[in-house]
Length: 211
Length: 343
Image 1: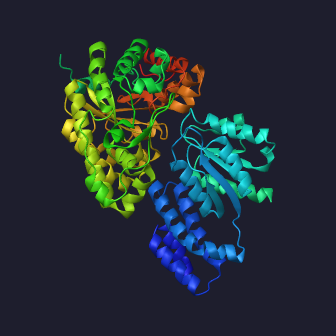
Image 2 (image 1 turned 180 degrees about the vertical axis):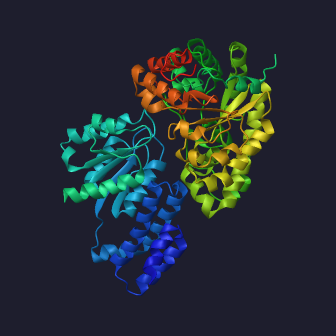
Image 3 (image 1 turned 30 degrees about the vertical axis):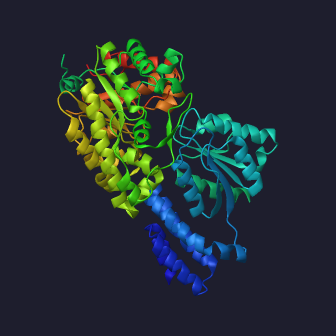
């Protein structure tokens, strides 16, 4: 069966092979949930290897690209058949900060963990995080910052949530090179994680507890 | 007067800590009362800033601005400027093989590099008690800014030929730029290659090391050193590749343990690092940075080739009370004032 090969293709970052195998599985009327699980299984292995320093950022990037090739094929079927993501997250790099590698890695790991991720890009204002999270009915707001001068904008997002009476509606996760668990506590964020793989694991765990 | 940079580096190796060499330039904006934007567009401010830092601190060398947008801007990249933060390259100027082929290698002096070269020349006239090192970007980090940082890493797998074409041009420019600094009389460059720190050892070996080596072979001699800086977390897994660059000294970030990385480097080669710029210099306290500086120095004190430094470029808004406390801790340690200090 193709399913192990799909997972392996994601793990090895073989985007075209993954697309071909997924197309074949769809043509053969394989349960779309099973195909999805194969894709996510491959990405989950990538996350573990990355966390254990067995692979590096470029390998994660090409695996994520392979995952997306597969997801793009099955997404319409997932929608038609009512298969829902395990949760939704709005992610962005905060205002004044144009760095996106960390944010992209977390996004890839969240997608690989079965989340729908709405990426609002870099240099995102507080209002953009809050508005998009409301619009998408997200579970998480994930913020990234690489600069010590811009990480202060994470607090602006939390302040805006409080101001609008929305603080309890979203789980706020933060990360980035200068960010620490102490800082998360100081500004009232719910969680800090030091790396992308842990962020995805924690998001799954937190959502499991919430539901 | 000719200065033998190699001898100076050798003199830093010894039983007693020689002092500190943090990558310290941008916080001069606070001493001058100007914005980062004013600093990066003015050689006069840059010289005044370097002099102000040199007057205030006993840093082993004076380091010019570590502005990693200036080389990409010379190639034609768009740069976004801020009042209180270091400039940042936006967008990408190479997406196809044709664009890579057509990419023109700029002359040293293009864009703001002219301001930076002039600042270095003037700095040498006013800072005469220590070497002056210029900050430049490394080849893979520059190529990443030209093709997009994320894309550069994907291209290593999906189109290595394209990224190598860009790397080739990046290295050619950096050789010319470093030579221009050398002509001005600067004593060396600190070459920041942080993007290579995200690569696997195999990819770093293929996409960073040979290009750094080319630059080193072209410019380094007894009077001019290339200091390799990489603040990535993968560095500890690629010491052979880093050493193969042939740089005169090495500088690492706080993503790795200094004691761990020192194990891999010859005892006659200066290795520097790695007090956390964000947590300690910006977000810390004088007490905290003193303790952290002492901790690293104690941990590494049996390595005679270790020189304490910041883990990366110190941000513009770092607190001067913390910078001063860092130097105080080094001085205290050097005079045997810390437990575990070598006699």
